[in-house]
Image: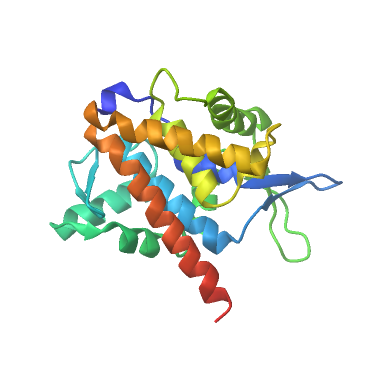
Length: 232
């Protein structure tokens, strides 16, 4: 499976889409939702990255390690793969995502700075601010799901699991408006659902792709639990 999928980081693209740039003398990159809840989305995206790289298997809401393979220059992905390998067993997907979510936003920031995807600016009033190093990169991250959602009617003619997983995570985190599409939020959600159904139908060709909706469902559950915890 790994040979048939373009290696892209769903986690990095979700991070970029989940932020907007606030203009001004010192422009800054601002998360659109709570970074705690975004951490759940990033955790799901990380699991998807490993799934598409053929490093994990997912079945019946459980995840386990498949085989070792270097995941680019992503130490966070490699650390998760090592942890799953050390477990020698299937683990509840929801628990894995919940455990990953805590602190993952901050770790992803550090990783994306190291990868020169975002740049840290001088602290102002005690807070470090961030901005995209290459605005074109951020625009491309938006372009993938925007084109896919625009074309979604009865289902796309070819598979693009990374983009469809990204779209599903955008829906799970209620970030549809970040795509700046001409459709209503409800229409965007409906088109994301169409892509999800199409992806599920791909199970006959590639069983692993059918696990992506399970990852998204786990993200929704964990994000919901984190949102409720804020008010306890």
